[in-house]
Length: 92
Image (cartoon, rainbow, N blue to C red; front, side):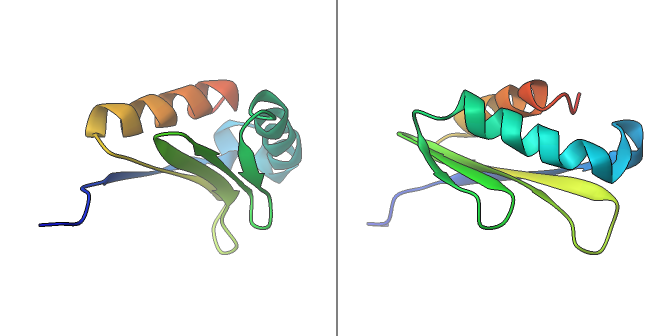
């Protein structure tokens, strides 16, 4: 009960619908540039830490997809992070 509550949302997007594997590099660079003022970890895709959560975009190593994961203190904020990054990366 003393631990804070967080909501995690996971989505995956088919790369064949957005240009295949060639689209991944430019997509990740676009995300890094947009969130340059936030804390970024690009060891495995791009993870962006914001004040009230985080969002991570990475290509799968086993499937032709990209995975998008967000975590925040509320479902609405986690969905906002997913929507913002998926729009930015042209996933939707």
